[in-house]
Image (cartoon, rainbow, N blue to C red; front, side):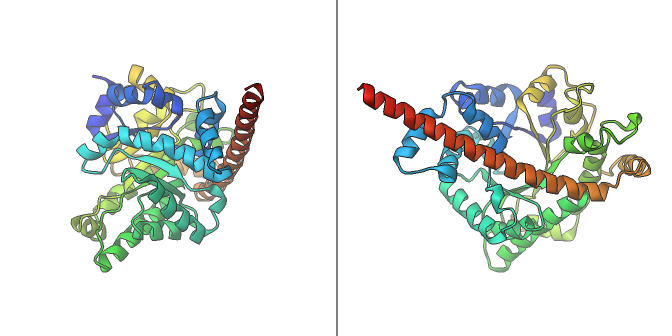
Length: 368
């Protein structure tokens, strides 16, 4: 049996961590869905930057949007929504067959708003309304300023992908924000179901400690943090508070593994996919990693709900001088800063592409 089918049957959703106009146009995304059990998709500024700079796929659309007076951020969001709404429509069957639990795509608010809670909320509401797709998440970082924005967006009925989570504690803060948003809706007699996922980044842990940890602990911290977080997730789902929300009609917020491509060239290219197999979760995976896992991955059972040996492993890192709580905060801050850099790079790319398209159009006008 195809390993991706095994993972799907275990109860984990496989989402593609990529989007380009090319994979929509040439049928690549459709093949990932039909051949590799992919049931959703995530995007980020870096992905769009590479997609737009990678050729001429976006030139015609950029020209049309420029002609309608769009530029900068507004032009980018229009381009992104053109791609993501097409992808969302491809995932409509998965969304329907899962009763609205699966089959989502994700669009990120501007990282420049990360410290502005109110502006983040308004952007989330506007972008989701602009998309006009039930199966489109808006991504908001689970930073201190992002947590209240997540609660308010959920309360306003916007499906949210909480991004940039690195620890059990950060995950629990995101879950708390989702619960508060749903509880506020119920208190006012509004429908309980506003979908959400909480995205915990894994491989960046191992990159961060690669030169600090003993050799025998190499590539083990991210998985241990994931196991610790999965235990908290399973425990939270058994609480009366959580069960009350589900009984009222809410789909449970699901835990999502992000940053699951192997960064260590000496490690298995399916390392994190195999280790993070867990029911009732999502793994958003780069296309090359999906293909590698489909080719030679081996499913070795589900992640233990009790966390397995995660605390012993984390204790070994502590003994080696690595403070996981401090590192989680640093990883989140560094991640937010990296998102800002990627966003600025993307806007520069949009400006370059816009200028090139305008120049080309002007040249054609002169020749005519």
